[in-house]
Length: 211
Figure 1 (tube, rainbow, N blue to C red):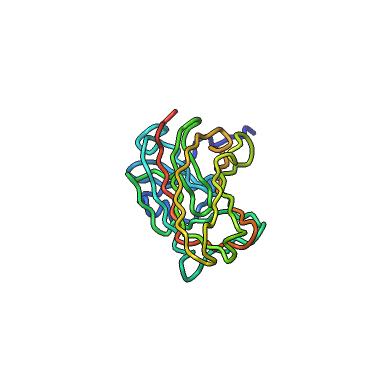
Figure 2 (figure 1 turned 90 degrees about the vertical axis):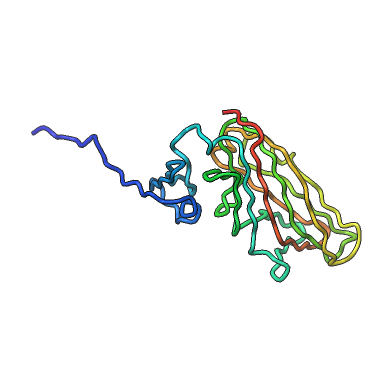
Protein backbone atom coordinates (compact mmCIF):
# COMPACT_ATOMS: atom_id res chain seq x y z
CA UNK A 1 0.00 0.00 0.00
CA UNK A 2 1.38 3.40 -0.98
CA UNK A 3 1.82 5.93 1.83
CA UNK A 4 0.65 9.41 0.89
CA UNK A 5 2.27 12.28 2.75
CA UNK A 6 0.72 15.68 3.12
CA UNK A 7 3.30 18.20 1.92
CA UNK A 8 1.06 21.24 2.21
CA UNK A 9 0.29 22.74 5.60
CA UNK A 10 -1.95 25.66 6.43
CA UNK A 11 -0.68 27.88 9.26
CA UNK A 12 -3.07 30.18 11.06
CA UNK A 13 -1.68 33.70 11.31
CA UNK A 14 -3.31 36.07 13.78
CA UNK A 15 -3.85 39.67 12.70
CA UNK A 16 -2.99 42.03 15.54
CA UNK A 17 -1.26 45.30 16.39
CA UNK A 18 2.22 46.21 17.58
CA UNK A 19 1.14 46.63 21.21
CA UNK A 20 -0.02 42.99 21.36
CA UNK A 21 3.17 41.77 19.65
CA UNK A 22 5.17 43.52 22.38
CA UNK A 23 3.13 42.12 25.28
CA UNK A 24 1.95 38.67 24.18
CA UNK A 25 3.26 35.46 25.76
CA UNK A 26 5.74 34.19 23.17
CA UNK A 27 5.27 30.68 21.76
CA UNK A 28 7.78 29.10 19.39
CA UNK A 29 6.30 28.95 15.90
CA UNK A 30 3.27 31.13 16.67
CA UNK A 31 2.81 33.82 14.03
CA UNK A 32 1.41 37.33 14.34
CA UNK A 33 0.83 39.86 11.57
CA UNK A 34 0.64 43.64 11.88
CA UNK A 35 0.27 46.25 9.15
CA UNK A 36 4.08 46.49 9.00
CA UNK A 37 5.49 42.98 9.45
CA UNK A 38 4.98 39.25 10.00
CA UNK A 39 6.37 37.93 13.32
CA UNK A 40 7.14 34.40 14.50
CA UNK A 41 7.94 33.26 18.03
CA UNK A 42 11.52 31.97 18.19
CA UNK A 43 13.75 31.39 21.25
CA UNK A 44 11.81 33.73 23.51
CA UNK A 45 11.43 36.55 20.99
CA UNK A 46 8.98 37.59 18.30
CA UNK A 47 11.27 37.96 15.30
CA UNK A 48 10.40 39.58 11.98
CA UNK A 49 10.23 36.98 9.22
CA UNK A 50 8.75 39.26 6.55
CA UNK A 51 9.62 41.63 5.04
CA UNK A 52 13.35 40.92 5.23
CA UNK A 53 14.17 44.50 4.38
CA UNK A 54 11.75 47.30 5.14
CA UNK A 55 11.30 50.25 7.44
CA UNK A 56 11.36 47.77 10.33
CA UNK A 57 15.04 47.17 9.57
CA UNK A 58 15.86 50.72 8.53
CA UNK A 59 17.13 53.54 10.69
CA UNK A 60 15.17 54.58 13.74
CA UNK A 61 15.17 54.79 17.53
CA UNK A 62 13.41 53.35 20.57
CA UNK A 63 13.26 54.47 24.20
CA UNK A 64 12.53 52.08 27.06
CA UNK A 65 11.54 53.42 30.51
CA UNK A 66 11.64 51.11 33.52
CA UNK A 67 9.05 51.52 36.29
CA UNK A 68 10.08 48.64 38.56
CA UNK A 69 13.01 50.36 40.22
CA UNK A 70 12.01 53.79 41.49
CA UNK A 71 13.00 56.14 44.31
CA UNK A 72 10.77 54.07 46.61
CA UNK A 73 12.02 50.69 45.31
CA UNK A 74 15.70 50.95 44.40
CA UNK A 75 17.74 48.17 42.79
CA UNK A 76 20.59 47.04 45.04
CA UNK A 77 23.94 46.27 43.41
CA UNK A 78 25.69 44.37 46.21
CA UNK A 79 29.43 44.72 46.70
CA UNK A 80 31.30 42.43 44.29
CA UNK A 81 28.19 40.81 42.77
CA UNK A 82 27.71 41.19 39.02
CA UNK A 83 24.10 41.69 37.94
CA UNK A 84 22.28 42.48 34.71
CA UNK A 85 21.08 46.07 34.50
CA UNK A 86 17.31 45.57 34.08
CA UNK A 87 14.67 47.57 32.28
CA UNK A 88 11.11 46.24 32.13
CA UNK A 89 10.12 48.57 29.28
CA UNK A 90 6.95 49.71 31.05
CA UNK A 91 6.82 52.68 28.68
CA UNK A 92 8.21 52.39 25.15
CA UNK A 93 8.52 55.18 22.59
CA UNK A 94 9.49 54.57 18.95
CA UNK A 95 10.36 56.70 15.97
CA UNK A 96 8.02 54.39 14.01
CA UNK A 97 6.04 51.22 14.58
CA UNK A 98 7.68 47.83 14.26
CA UNK A 99 11.22 48.55 15.45
CA UNK A 100 12.83 47.17 18.58
CA UNK A 101 16.46 47.14 19.68
CA UNK A 102 15.86 45.72 23.18
CA UNK A 103 13.75 42.90 24.64
CA UNK A 104 12.40 43.82 28.12
CA UNK A 105 11.41 40.18 28.76
CA UNK A 106 14.98 38.90 28.46
CA UNK A 107 16.93 42.12 29.25
CA UNK A 108 18.74 41.55 25.93
CA UNK A 109 19.97 44.24 23.56
CA UNK A 110 19.10 43.05 20.05
CA UNK A 111 19.93 44.05 16.47
CA UNK A 112 18.88 43.50 12.88
CA UNK A 113 21.80 42.92 10.52
CA UNK A 114 25.46 41.93 10.72
CA UNK A 115 27.67 45.02 11.23
CA UNK A 116 24.79 47.42 11.88
CA UNK A 117 25.94 50.39 13.96
CA UNK A 118 24.00 51.54 17.02
CA UNK A 119 24.17 54.35 19.54
CA UNK A 120 22.79 53.69 23.02
CA UNK A 121 22.19 56.17 25.81
CA UNK A 122 21.84 54.81 29.35
CA UNK A 123 20.33 56.99 32.06
CA UNK A 124 19.69 56.20 35.71
CA UNK A 125 20.01 57.59 39.21
CA UNK A 126 22.59 56.05 41.54
CA UNK A 127 23.84 56.41 45.11
CA UNK A 128 26.26 54.64 47.44
CA UNK A 129 26.23 54.31 51.21
CA UNK A 130 30.03 54.63 51.26
CA UNK A 131 30.76 57.10 48.47
CA UNK A 132 34.49 57.45 49.23
CA UNK A 133 35.28 53.76 48.69
CA UNK A 134 32.64 52.64 46.17
CA UNK A 135 32.81 52.65 42.38
CA UNK A 136 30.73 50.85 39.75
CA UNK A 137 31.64 49.08 36.48
CA UNK A 138 29.08 49.09 33.66
CA UNK A 139 29.81 47.11 30.49
CA UNK A 140 28.16 45.33 27.57
CA UNK A 141 28.55 41.54 27.43
CA UNK A 142 27.57 38.81 24.98
CA UNK A 143 28.07 35.04 24.90
CA UNK A 144 30.89 34.64 22.40
CA UNK A 145 32.54 36.61 19.64
CA UNK A 146 33.33 40.31 19.71
CA UNK A 147 34.61 41.37 23.18
CA UNK A 148 31.80 43.83 23.89
CA UNK A 149 32.95 44.19 27.50
CA UNK A 150 35.27 46.89 26.13
CA UNK A 151 32.12 48.99 25.71
CA UNK A 152 32.13 50.13 29.30
CA UNK A 153 32.11 52.98 31.78
CA UNK A 154 33.38 53.32 35.35
CA UNK A 155 31.16 55.30 37.71
CA UNK A 156 32.57 57.12 40.72
CA UNK A 157 30.89 59.00 43.55
CA UNK A 158 32.61 62.36 44.06
CA UNK A 159 31.01 63.06 47.43
CA UNK A 160 28.09 62.35 49.68
CA UNK A 161 27.05 59.06 51.24
CA UNK A 162 23.58 58.08 49.97
CA UNK A 163 23.47 61.21 47.80
CA UNK A 164 21.71 60.84 44.45
CA UNK A 165 23.88 61.14 41.34
CA UNK A 166 22.51 61.30 37.79
CA UNK A 167 24.27 58.94 35.37
CA UNK A 168 24.04 59.64 31.63
CA UNK A 169 26.37 58.13 29.06
CA UNK A 170 26.30 57.43 25.30
CA UNK A 171 27.84 54.23 23.87
CA UNK A 172 28.42 53.11 20.29
CA UNK A 173 28.63 49.49 19.17
CA UNK A 174 28.30 47.34 16.05
CA UNK A 175 26.88 43.84 16.09
CA UNK A 176 28.36 40.50 15.07
CA UNK A 177 26.62 37.20 14.23
CA UNK A 178 26.53 36.08 17.88
CA UNK A 179 24.90 39.37 18.85
CA UNK A 180 22.19 38.75 16.24
CA UNK A 181 21.62 35.16 17.45
CA UNK A 182 21.81 35.69 21.21
CA UNK A 183 21.70 39.41 21.95
CA UNK A 184 23.82 41.08 24.62
CA UNK A 185 23.31 42.39 28.16
CA UNK A 186 24.44 45.35 30.19
CA UNK A 187 26.23 44.05 33.28
CA UNK A 188 26.93 46.14 36.35
CA UNK A 189 29.06 45.45 39.41
CA UNK A 190 29.57 47.61 42.49
CA UNK A 191 32.94 47.39 44.24
CA UNK A 192 33.96 48.74 47.63
CA UNK A 193 30.37 48.86 48.85
CA UNK A 194 26.75 48.51 47.82
CA UNK A 195 25.08 50.85 45.33
CA UNK A 196 21.45 51.74 44.71
CA UNK A 197 20.08 52.30 41.17
CA UNK A 198 16.69 53.53 39.97
CA UNK A 199 14.80 55.42 37.21
CA UNK A 200 16.52 53.45 34.42
CA UNK A 201 16.09 54.56 30.79
CA UNK A 202 17.53 53.00 27.61
CA UNK A 203 17.54 55.04 24.40
CA UNK A 204 18.79 53.13 21.35
CA UNK A 205 19.22 54.47 17.81
CA UNK A 206 20.37 52.59 14.73
CA UNK A 207 22.77 54.98 12.99
CA UNK A 208 23.94 52.77 10.11
CA UNK A 209 22.17 49.90 8.38
CA UNK A 210 24.78 47.49 7.03
CA UNK A 211 22.12 45.17 5.64
